[in-house]
Structure formats: structure tokens, C-alpha cells
Image (cartoon, rainbow, N blue to C red; front, side, top):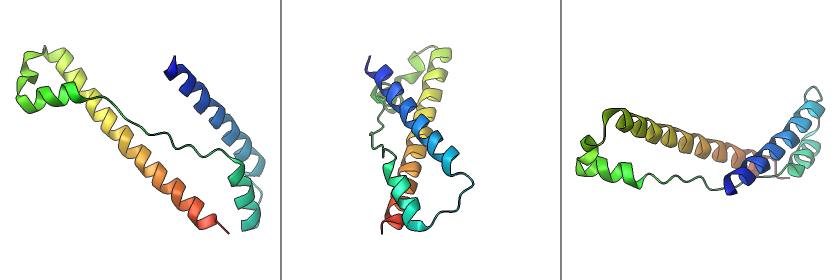
Length: 105
């Protein structure tokens, strides 16, 4: 239920962003108008966390070999994808914060 609400919230943010980019895509606006328009967009600051304690514990203890290889490989791949997603989110947050700081009049 919570996941569905989060997805709906992000979809709404995406729609607002798409309206913004479609509206101002070819326009060259002065910096103060750019800041004004960007400040109307919602700034999302939702922490991104994953529960990976089970696979980490199994890897650290050397017990990961007890899991069938097909499942083990999927868990390890999931952990890799989670790490990649977390790094991308941090990179995006850093970029977003830089834009907001640089446009602040």
C-alpha cells in the first residue's frame, strides 16, 4: 500500500516536470524567471533505503554458499542493483541541491 502511494506521488511529480519542460523547452528565460518557475516544482527529498541485512550477513559469515546458486545469484544481483540505485539517487540529490543553490537569487 505504501509503495503504491509512493509510486503515485512520483508519477504526479513526473507529470508536473513534463509540463514544465514542455512549456519552457525552447524558451530562453532570464535567471530570475527560471528560478521562479523551478521553485514551483516539488522538491523531493525522500530517503532511499533498502533492507539488505540478510544477504550481507550471509556474505560476511560465509554462509551464502548454503543458499541454492540460482537464488544466491539473484540476491547478489539485487544487492548490486540496490547499490547502483542508491549511488544514482545520491548523485541526483547532489545535482538537485547544486541547481537550487546556484539559482537562489
